Amino acid sequence: MAEQRFQNLNVVVTGGAGGLGKAIVDAFARQGANVISADIAFADEAAGNPIIPRHIDVTDEASWLTLMDFADAALGGVDVLVNNAGIYRPNIPFEEMPLDVWRQHLAINADGVFLGCKHAILRMKAKGRGGSIVNMGSGMSITANPSGAAYCASKAAVLMTTRTAAGAAGRYGVRVNAVLPGAVPTEMLMGNMTGEDTERAFLARMEAYSPLGRLASPEDIARAVLFLADPANAAISGIYVPVDGGNMPGA
Ligand SMILES: NC(=O)c1ccc[n+]([C@@H]2O[C@H](COP(=O)([O-])OP(=O)(O)OC[C@H]3O[C@@H](n4cnc5c(N)ncnc54)[C@H](O)[C@@H]3O)[C@@H](O)[C@H]2O)c1
Image (cartoon, rainbow, N blue to C red; front, side):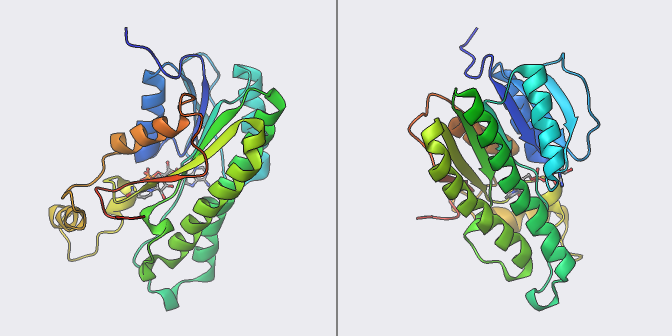
């Protein structure tokens, strides 16, 4: 059997019930990892299978403590955290953005990533065996979309938090990086369709933005996450990798 790159490593993926989260969880499991797939949509299950569904609300610090305590008790700690949970409410003109919608984006996409980094770094530092964190940004971490202002602000925060966390955690052998997906056909992306779109016309429009004429698949995103998380890539920290069909040249 081919070498399994994450054999015996403990991985936590948030947003594990979603389109990208599922692909990331499966990719780590195929590489031999023990994976906690955490999501607000999941109820807690006991350890025993290579993939363990657990409940988390990433906006709630107590929920992070519960999850990390479980990882310590059931698996002996966390080696890799993927902060993937996120929301996007599209097609809201900037000047019509309700404050509560703005704050919901910041709470889930930005606070959630901050809390994940904070608590993973604390646990990894205490164990003293290093570790890796991968944060899910977006093309909109660096590209302004006026009808997605809250999402853009929250994903820009993900990028800067990746860099501040990487700067802080390097001394403990903990690496922090980000993946910036372009459009990936998941439930989240299809939520961008407007009334006049057919599904095929919408996807064709998205594909046409990319010089390669294609969208990234959830598996394409998962491969980039595993590359950054791989302990073999020990000299890479504080960077972001766009996976978007070439949409952001020079990004
Ligand atoms: N699909 C795309 O085109 C795309 C592009 C760029 C970035 N992204 C990012 O990738 C990540 C995953 O996106 P996706 O397309 O799989 O979306 P998705 O909607 O399919 O999945 C998101 C998951 O996050 C979970 N979640 C939401 N709020 C949560 C909370 N408070 N606590 C815990 N879990 C919560 C949801 O239950 C869901 O399972 C997100 O951060 C998203 O912003 C997606």
